[in-house]
Length: 378
View (tube, rainbow, N blue to C red):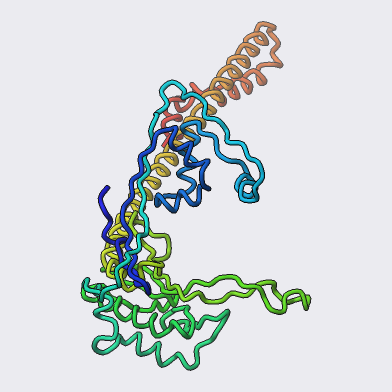
């Protein structure tokens, strides 16, 4: 398994040094059954450098029974416990399983002085004149507001949210990141609209921030008053740098202090990540424009279809009206013919009026109906 150089970071300890190295464990089905019933899964997971969830999934896949709740407590107390037997494998079930993980190994040799080259962030932190945004932020520190153990500078200053103890380090890290970004022709500024830190790649703006993690602790006065909260938030000293506002690219957007790797060793990755996010944002905007254009085309097509349906409906109604009028005109003429056969001279004037009315409603007596239909369809 190839070793990831980013995670192979040495951490100082009093009696030596710790190294993260790749681990590969291959077991048969019978051997895995014996292991999971010999020690708890959490211990196996730490020993093999994988998660207990991965071990549990492998056991379920191979139909290996696992100890139930309370099994290890009973065993440690000396109570009698029963190991579930392993049943025969089903047809097609693999007989072996392999785990790939990373384990922390401590060297017994005294820790030597660090010899690997420092990252660009460490080289730039505190070197030369600080960025104007950092100068402005330091001037604001004396009047910064404090809430739940964190200092808030707020717009138009750098929106960092860290404790007093971490403020110098946070500003130093941001100063170094600003230099790294500007070396890549990426402008850094505080948005006048949102008050957020933004990196501009061309016309594309990528917001980012640096903050300190907090944890819940019990409130010393919990339960003493009606409005007293049960918990307080206190800083942990762990800093987090992240690109915010719905990152588009499938790349790393969050860097955090770890037990082995500190922010100083990974923030040199930020410029490349910002460029990838900007490229993804541009591609997303172009795709959105194409989608909107397609939506407009479909809407125009639906509108044209609706107009066509309305025109056809008007023509159909006109056709039915002409057909009814033709039938009525013919009925009136038939009535006039019947009246004439009576020979009544008093009906001559009525017959003349009735025939004129028939001619008036007859669609064939005036403008032909097909010409009327063409005019109404325009």
